[in-house]
Image (cartoon, rainbow, N blue to C red; front, side):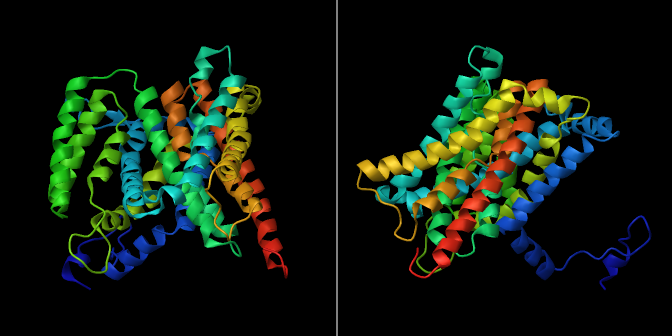
Length: 416
């Protein structure tokens, strides 16, 4: 044991031995797995739901309302706000890296291959919004949540597919991933355009300076964290001050990172390198912590009955379960029917139906949009959370049934 480790003791007096580089690498690799990230997300949400419905629920509320940060910089934010505005910026930075990789070197660079999943993503966002708007029509306050059921939680959906996808073609995961990438891009645009109440132009313009400097450094393949992190932090703070949701800063920073290697040869480009570095933090910390602070809703004492009878909850459930399924599957069928775009030969329509149901798993971004639409802690926001959880469970169960039936059908001789 190293001498400095002898001085590092826990409160119980036991020696604290930090993880070795190999152990840290194994942990990071574990957190990159979709099933692990999805399990942590679900676990954090379940802890929040249970805690919020116990006699100690006031402690849960007080924890989320605890303020930390420098007030002089107007960053004395609640822990819940730090989770949604700060930690989710890491999630959106990784999403930005993934988006750029797909557009530059992935499936989205080929219009012919991208047409079906792009159409599926658009259909899977338009129809849920239309159904939600139809259900809440006549109530402008509740209509503000029209975008809640438009988002698909890629981590959650891929985790379910990883668990139930044995016997299914790999093209199904590629289709879902491409669909989700486009879904994320549209969701980011919706947040920036429709959920920015006040806009301060000066901080937003100033934010372009650190973003541009960050871009110059990464284009020169600079990886030094002590240069990049301060610039990212300043960009995030300025975007936050502008009134635009601060997670947009993460996306913009991700877009500046180059995808293609400068020197020929094998190995990841800088975007893939950053994605591998930051995904464990996103999946293992940022998203679960956000889910913990966002998913805790009290349904005791009549709260569940009030939620289920509210048009907000009904609109979210119908939008995510029915809207996503019909929108994704219907758009895929229409485009394949009336254009030259075709499904991958290894896929069949029951696979598309199962994938469309997976699209109804809306969690991370849906919870974020709910908070932006109704304000955290309001009755409408609580009802949004109930609707998202209920819809995600229903969509997961139905998708599992459909995909397992499709896998069994493939296992039969002579059937695909």
